[in-house]
Picture 1 (cartoon, rainbow, N blue to C red):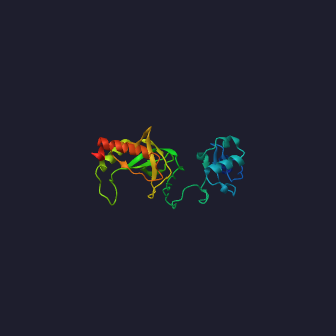
Picture 2: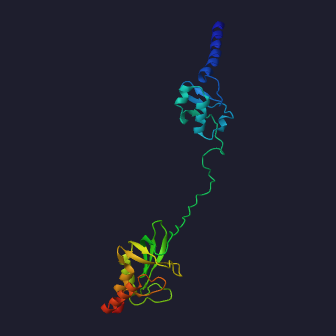
Picture 3: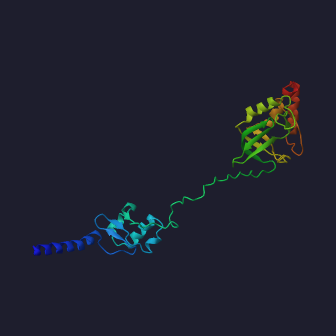
Length: 252
C-alpha cells in the first residue's frame, strides 16, 4: 500500500510539472508574450516597454510579427488570435474616440467670388431668379451669384420699396420670368460694370437675340440711356419708335 501511494504521489508531482510546459511552451519574446502551440494564439503574459509602444491592436500585431520567431503562427496572426490578458492600450495613444470630444461643427460655406469682368467682355451664366422686368439674378460657372440690371432700358416698377406697382409692371415682370427663368444666357458688358447699388450692368443675349432690345420692341420697357453705356442706344431708340407706332404694351 505504501509503495502504491509513493508511486501515485510521484505521478501527481510529475504531471504538475509537465502540464505547464505543454500549455505554455517556449520562452517569452521581447514583447513579453509567446504563441500557444495548440492553436497559435498569442498570449501577452508580461507586456514589456516595447509592447506598450503599440497604440492599437494593429501595431501590436506588427511588433509580434517583427520580434517573434514563430513564422508559422505570425504568418496567419489576426486580432482574434491575440489574448491581451488584461493589457489595455494607453488612452492617450489609442485611436478610440473620447466621449468628451467636442461636437462637430458645420463647415462654413465660403461664397464664391465673381470672376474677373472686363470692359466689353462676355460671360455665359444661368438665370436663377427674375426680380422684375429689367433685373435678374444669375449664377456664373464658378458658382458665384449676382444681380444684373439690364442696360439701356427701363420697365415699370414692381418691387421698388418706395413706389407702388406701376402700370404694365406686372406684365413686364411676368414676360421676363417666362423668357429668362432657368435659361442659360450671355451677359455682355459695356464700359461701366456696376451701378451705384452694386448690381452688374449688362446686355442679355439669348442666342442671337438681344433681350434688352426685345423688351423695348414688345412695349414692355422704354429706353433709358445712362452714359457711358451707350453701345446699343440707336437700336433701342429704333425699337421704341416701332413699339409706339404699333401701340404695343406701354404705348396702348
